[in-house]
Image (cartoon, rainbow, N blue to C red; front, side):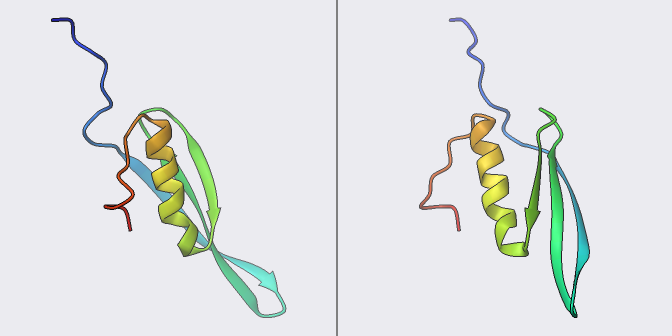
Length: 71
C-alpha cells in the first residue's frame, strides 16, 4: 500500500508578543505567530485573536479541526 502524505502529528510555532502604545494612554498587545515547518507568518492584535490565528494556520497546514473540541 503506498504511503499517503499526512499532516504531521505535531506543529511547532514561535510566538512574539509586545505591548504597543497607541497614544492617549491606550495600549494594546500585539503579536506574531510563525509556523516553523512551513514558514507561514501571521500577525495579530489582542489576545482574543491568538487562538483563531493558530487554528487558521493549522487548517491551512492540512489539520482537520473539530470545532466541538476547539475552544
